[in-house]
Image (cartoon, rainbow, N blue to C red):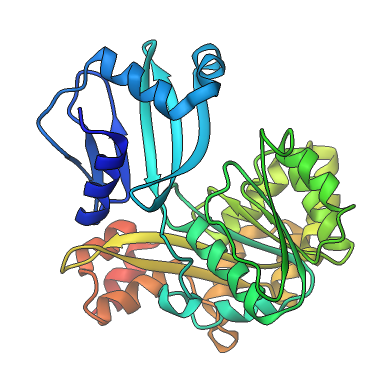
Length: 348
């Protein structure tokens, strides 16, 4: 079996984003969104156990008992996010190759208004999208831009720590859930006593975390977080629906006052190979605050569609632009669209 070091080196050279090791299958990796074999060698049970023991180290007994383990490490000069898990009692691996350098915001293909989000002093900014859509990379670029332009204190809560920042103008504390703090919610509560200006929450996954994030924003902090949703309206609904019915009116009110922007991302197959970034950007206006407060989230998409003057755009508008630029095909755009008829009509 190839070593993990060798696999990462090959994946890096071939432009792959993820490595998957599964018993009784050849090692696989993800290139341009597709799973392909790395070699013809089939992984045995002993191979998988040895790999898990190597990656888990002193945490192997804990992994063996719980069935999953998250960590991060550097192989072949490339920092990687590691997720060990069991399937049918046998260790498997999903390994994500992270960029060696935190990219500049202007090089990611994001909407032109996104860099302005780094100038906010308080409120909540959400980056949403499915797994593998580049949320972590965008957040890292946003925080690094702050690091190089402002004299602030940044606290991150991550599971695990992915990009390691090199402090410039900012003081930066990166806390890893499970090692440095018990949970996102506990770490977030503690962060309010750590004199931060900017807080990054790796995932807003439960009520306690979301509630504390809103409190942090209300008390003058700039909070960045992620959600697995496909649009700004879905992000609002997801947050509100975490709470019981008798609290939802209050949460809508608080969210309407603290939410500043929602950036939703998709990676779309390009006509020439590789993938293009398509983004919806909702910049929260007074009109959108009223829609959030009133629970009229179905109208948010219309408000975003007419916000081009301040830099907003819907996902479908982004897809149409990519078709017109020749980056993606019309059929692919229709497949990824929210409103297929709109894209069919305008992607010409």
